[in-house]
Length: 434
Image 1 (cartoon, one colour):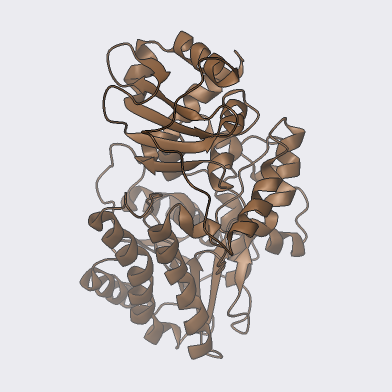
Image 2 (tube, one colour):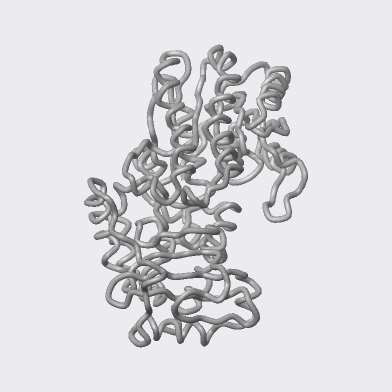
């Protein structure tokens, strides 16, 4: 791991969303140098599902060697940001570094994204980043350190990163566009950069999105903290960069990345927006028995960029074949469904399958003891999943991870995304039976 050098000693960092996850990890890394940390986050009272408050984070920061100023800040509220900035300047004499980490996520399609979710993502991600930067910049310009770091992705216009969650992508790219514009606007005065992880990072939010077992496919927040520390200790001439954590740390001499893994040796999920890494990731997954067709999806998506996608299966005209590997898979699924699975899932899933064994099937994990069947479910589906029948079988036999299927475009999801990700638990149970 990247060692501390003491370069941030006495510096003041204003970090949004620093009560937990990546924000807190960056704060703790800087605290080891003896930095001052302004914890600008919403959570002042314990959350029923997410551990950590601004006050527990403050205790950890001070135990690590830093000084902490916990401030209740919802980045959607300009007055709260301004109040925290004023308190930071009064307590520490200025602001040297701003880390825009606070973010909201909803991985839903256009028709499934409510106005409330849309407003949350746009106002927290894009607007919140812009406003926090604006309010901190007068003080940053007076600092010798003078850095803004946005936790946002490189600007990648491959449609694959828009088609499944257009609103979320726009909101995150808004943060990245702040980097693009502000780096030029304040060149020579304030460094403005973006940092994004190469792989999924294990946080409480990831736990909620991915469900039990997802941590084995993730890296720890330490890798992002180390990369952030590396950026923030560079001169302000280092600006306008869209940095990937692993790429930067390799240049800094880090060779063993297993130290950052939650489960060393286990393949990790690539993060969103980085399609240049899909081939390498596919090779790693194939070594673990994943579908060798993963890489082909990238090529197929590339071909789709110049024309419309193929037609979808119609629920009214499709009929599932009563035999074959798909039918056999559903028989086995029904055999392992029990009250505990139904109680822990509480969802009805409709599968629109294309290809050789195309048709519509459902899994009811919401009503009574649960059941499966062909055709439409007896009640409205909470989640609709579209994929090829071949990939469906691969997914339920453990040869294709659901998360990888979704991220590569093999699996399209409509409806409740959080509920969709709970299905991975059932998939894991089936892997040992098929």
